[in-house]
Image 1 (cartoon, rainbow, N blue to C red):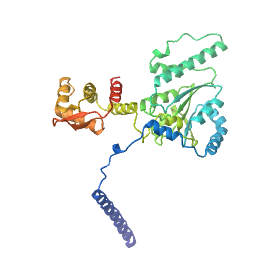
Image 2 (cartoon, rainbow, N blue to C red):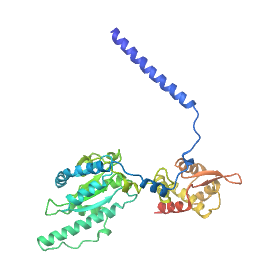
Image 3 (tube, one colour):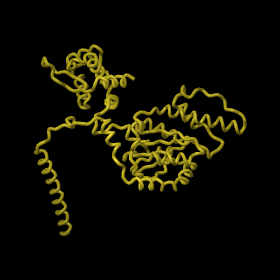
Image 4 (cartoon, one colour):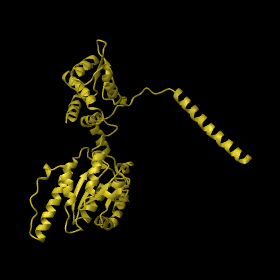
Length: 368
């Protein structure tokens, strides 16, 4: 009993010591001087100049990278077999897997139709992807039925005028006579910026669940599996996971991402601001639109006085009080969409820290 009490006392003392040291560290940390420097003060280089410099960097271990990629060719027959059995293939691991997957598709899937989706692009129209798949499937069905029985299927309504549900129903309801036949959809970076929203992932899962579709995809983000629930992983995508690190540079994929150490492009600035605005309420977006339109129509002014903004928003029934407007402005400032500066006459003015071209693009984005 005494031994047990001694052990408990020691544990309590250790716990107390840990807590005391934690709060002492916090106190010492908060008492130190904080730097007044800001990220915006960094003198960034031009993006084109930085990309040119990056392209001149000599790659290392090229022979080893090629040898590693070639070693995966022994798996091609197994991958084809798993696709024929109804599974999807998901490639993960460090390095670009674009060349590996394209080599697999061009050498081992020559008997099948292949549709490629570049998920690393900043914008992808998922409906256009489904339309393309429906057209490929329709052509395959026509050719197979014409050669087997001579009876062509009836004319279909144009796919581009159909709804998403109709297109998915067509893909899912088209049973091929040859059970070994399918369309392979290659998705480079299924976790890419244009595909990672939940709605798009749900559509991709529904596509993967179609009997005549097989998915071969790659992921690079460490949290990519969080995009899917249990049903999507095991029932719809039906993944076979393959760890295939290539250590190859992300040359193609990286071309479509802004460089951290370079000045952001106009399109990227507008797109980032549009994404933030989409998370706000419609009224907040309308208030922002009023400020943006004023800034574009008064380019020589230092900003829009807060009182003027309140008057216009009140007339348009966007806000009911100054308190409501202030809550919207707080959201804008928290997201760094709007900043304040003092006018020459002493009153505070609001302005959007974007160039004219970027602001015009942003207005077009939020007006769509």
